[in-house]
Length: 190
Image 1 (cartoon, rainbow, N blue to C red):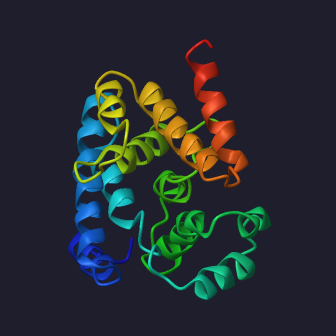
Image 2 (tube, rainbow, N blue to C red):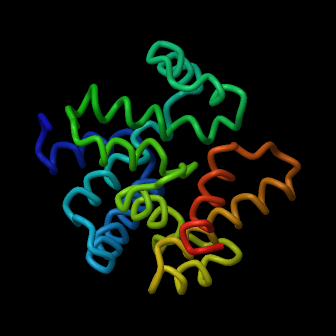
């Protein structure tokens, strides 16, 4: 890491509107709480949370260029552009902010989609993104309650809400999200 926490915060804050920064602050605090509750590293979880939406407000063209130039999975380009900021953000975190911690980078990379065999860090940041205090969507309180005792149950409910929303809007579902949900259910013995 080639910048201080404070320098990273200021750099990230400058790349998004205040409302989104308030969301990032919520994800930071929730990631710390989840890490402390479930035995994760709160400092590393907070770092991933600070950077998780760093590319959220970049232009589609700019994100597409990084996906192509960095040879990220081409399937991304076939799905909703809302997914792109996560893998692009991991590239930015590494190249512009000097983050070398692969678990932090992966937590940024998979915070919207999840993946099979999510690490503790992946689960913390992904779930924090669903339940930070500023989130307000149908079912969020149920996800928050589940997150009090199980990262996996909270994430399954979160992925279910995403999948239900996409189905209701007749949108395509990113396969990694379905795979992540199925893997979490299997981890719980289902």
